[in-house]
Image 1: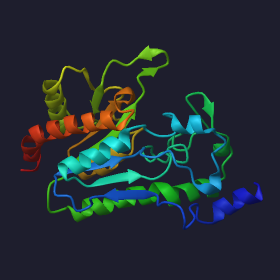
Image 2: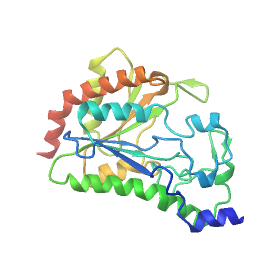
Image 3: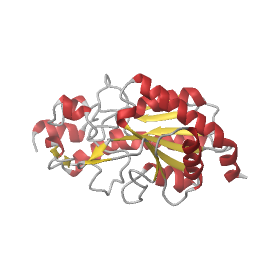
Length: 265
């Protein structure tokens, strides 16, 4: 291992001048909704350079979920809901992957090699876990623990590419779930009634315990109604599109909130 790599492995990954691993917006929000954004940023810690990638690659979907954070922030403001956002790229460590998963720290993503992720030592992996993964999930735990006396409905905000492997994805938005469909079913119904766009159920992917971490642990693990929101990226490329989708989601949530809260009765 090179000396520079050894330093990364044995010291704090983030310098004191860098943004924190997690951002909390409106932590005392009054809404029953709790919003999460696992892939909010494509930032890379300074000590890791660019992971061997160029700016175009880091700005693509392999580096984050473009537009998701913008929608989540706007939705937080509309609902007065707390929001927790990850602070660094999924390529450094993916906050929505179990640590046992091969997708936790990928050596290649969508055919793009990630040079700085290759051949990591156990200490280097642990450095990323301690600096980025654990703080994000500890913040979610702390927020939810502080709301233990009132209902919380967990919504994780993501985005997806319009085309995958040459196949167009027709859904403008998808709502996904794992073992518990109740909250997702209400959101699916409200969105289907609110516009002429195609809504996908468990599209573009369902929640899977072997692949996903946030909803299985913080939602299903706590017995909280939860769902994952996936918005197609061509609809949220700019502020105007993000505002439109935040308003659609806010309207849908208001329509189903009272019924969803019956899950706690």
